[in-house]
Image (tube, rainbow, N blue to C red; front, side, top):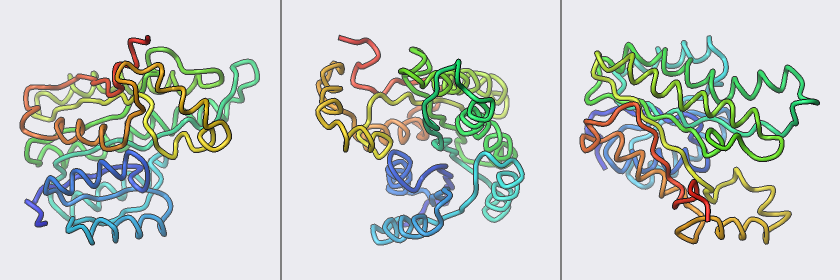
Length: 253
């Protein structure tokens, strides 16, 4: 599969939804640059995509480290002269903690992982997105941005609410440059994110489908398809939007 010259960066792309997003954008003809922190797994993932005919490479750096982000995004942007699509997928629960016992270190770490990362990577990419073809940024928020998360996940919900807001703010800020900014909000997707509960309480994990209108858990491909659409010309009149990809889960049953 030949690249059409378009460049996409996907953060947190070595597993789960991020990897499927990278695969789908590669199938769409992008040269995809997978970001992660595990260099060995990153190399394996790139090799996997290359065997499928996708043009891919790995760029390992910590998205919460401002200096690392600036250095690596600049390196990519200068290498290709532009960035067409940036997918800020990196993030995570970071653990669980009730507010009364929550340490400041935990609070800052969760914010850094989910919100600082979007700011750092987007800011570094903007000069190169300005040179891109139909450029856009696609962020990842969560149901937790609306319902504040489950027990102990309050800071995760708070940080993802920040992602929802910064998506709209970036959309406003970058419209003059022709850069669109949107977000996806996945519901319960069957990924390693839920590995612990799936292995320890499989019946609980399976029961989650009962709260989803479409009666099943999501697959990474379900989210990747929506990201593909948002990056495409078909979404050229969409910006500052967040799309729920949860099978109707946000409505409850």
